[in-house]
Length: 139
Image 1 (cartoon, rainbow, N blue to C red):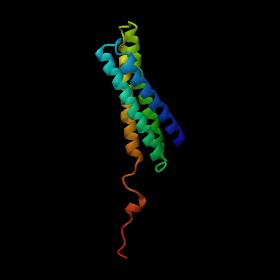
Image 2: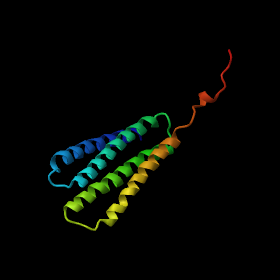
Image 3: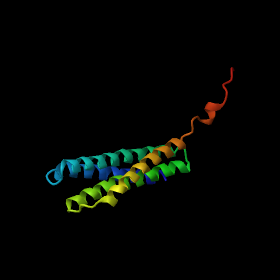
Image 4: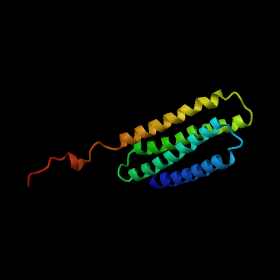
């Protein structure tokens, strides 16, 4: 699972950089300022949560829990739903579609996936290690 998270995180980070460069250099003359800002938000959240997926992969070594795995899955789903819906909305707007109500409804679910991913990460890490709970001897 750890390698899967690392490899997925690396791919998502690669795509985030590529999309960020594409947006900054090639889309400037074609999109509105608001669309460019949305594009930047999508790539920023994509990179931030790719890094979070690296963190989950590292923490999985120490805390092999299902909630840790769910944290990673939720981060990936959040990227696909949140960033993906923003990219889709920008493309559809550029192509002239105006009624994007359903696409706009999807984006907050991606944000919810991010929140749940962070919550699962929080739950996965115990408040104290077992050796920290043992009373210290006065030897």
